[in-house]
Length: 210
Length: 39
Image (tube, rainbow over all chains, first blue to last red; front, side, top):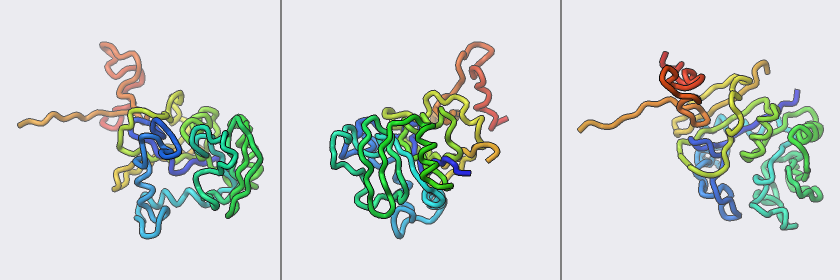
């Protein structure tokens, strides 16, 4: 079965998936790179990086996926839909290599990038988007790419089969919260937490029975 | 000099008790879930 999976989604200790004041120069607002230092340090991110627990989790971002869905706030800074030339943060060869669906209230024609990534812009509910992405994934899994708002919506709709959250021991104090409205979410999952020597905690949610 | 220390349990979404904390319900509703680790 094609699973909906989340990988490498970082939150602060107080539950924010991004800081306040997202912009072109600061994609994660006042959080800067602090939520992702653990990831940037891995071999998965760059040659010569660490090869320990953090890398072992990070590597799972790639295999087995046939599509990704992301929210509008992951694809670009606020207002990107007003820039007809905006093609995402990732340059000519984005790290998705599959059909990639961007949830937006401002659909535009699809963009074929290098390396197998094609961006599709759809105005759809989480369930509709997942159905569309599953068809495109051709039997493989669908990555739920975030950000916080879209992930919260997918969790609230009960659509996520496996989720890897990384708790970073910083207090952002402001930004976009992940957990609001998800009381008791853990009851639907087997939950495991693994502490890394880097200081972050990897928390995995695996849907019971999968 | 003695240090001030704190040891406290917190849910993943940042709560340290459930709702309705009062005498006889010190951790709030379902708050004891936070302390299963030390039972």
